[in-house]
Length: 467
Ligand code: AMP
Ligand code: ZN
Image 1 (cartoon, rainbow, N blue to C red):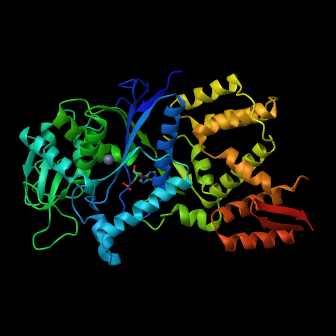
Image 2: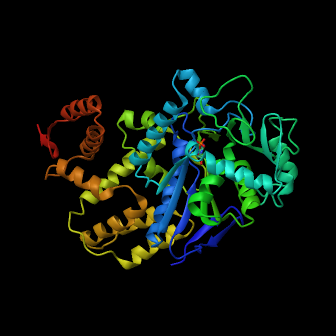
Image 3: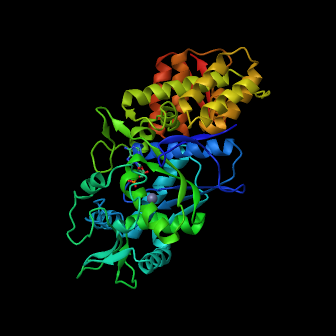
């Protein structure tokens, strides 16, 4: 079955045709590790996971690369301001390396909690300084660079079709770039590929280069590392929509200027997670919510957030509210209960539902439609064992661990059917116990007791008895 993906380059859904039979190259812009990822960032990584799982479902073998930005991302997008990692290190009195390592671990834990499949290659910017210096040398030899008092810049006027990804006319791009003024730049859209360490101060992270001591410009890293691991031209590059006009536009310019070849065939961008009122969730704002704060600490199954993200198409903005999250938690718990009800015998996958499911995901990752197919199948008159086979098959893409969650829960449910409210509390307590959130598990036990049930724990899980 053909797979269609919306390509920001053409502003159209296009049939996906990989460059080679051996593998599909996918590059994902990774996090800047100076803070925890917020739910907005994680929405983008979830969308990328839906993409990855859809490609795998379509039998493609992947080679996936994700960077870790541990140096060079400045507080302003236009090469001005402070390095985010160094600033945080100074504020917390820790080394920049410690800060980067700490938030890298935290990020990888979040991905695990959300069942996001990690990339094949993680690459840290600080491990690829030579590759970045070599790329600057190539750009310099080809005449694309110039020097200012604070760094080496890429001359965007030398690169034709600089706006091919943003589809903005040059004046609009220049206007956007004018916000932070640097009078030494030849064009407002020019960007730093090497920044000099400020005179008289020593940065924690700095390297010598043919142009002076300093550090690489933020955009350069993704070009240098994708070139190294995926080659001069590769299949898919993705990120959030905020990267279209500057970061990805600059990646295309410097990569294609260096190689003379098309950089990427398909550009995919995920829409924002907004808080109510349409404001983007951002690291710099106090609307910033982490997975830990919004879910895990409250005993909410982290996969409830994945379930919520599956319900909104990745190109549509998603609105965050606590109520919508609780709704998703209930919805997921109800789904797990339905799966418990199917028993444990796995039959065969119904071909009609399977192909409807694949048609949904292959239509530009239409996960809301894919979920609708799952619910329709669960309501159908298929045998329970065949429904279970369908659940198992679809969950390869949905990534909700439905069979595992159902197994855990069924151990905990007594033979006689329990009221829905008690089932919900037991499921919530199961998650709390998995997360070793003992205080929440204890308070849920009290709640279950007050509702007339006793709960005991053993090594297999919870045992529930009527008082
Ligand atoms: P950063 O760590 O800031 O480089 O961002 C990591 C990823 O999260 C990038 O792909 C961004 O485009 C994306 N992102 C940032 N804010 C949001 C948001 N509110 N909703 C969805 N994605 C976001
Ligand atoms: Zn990038």
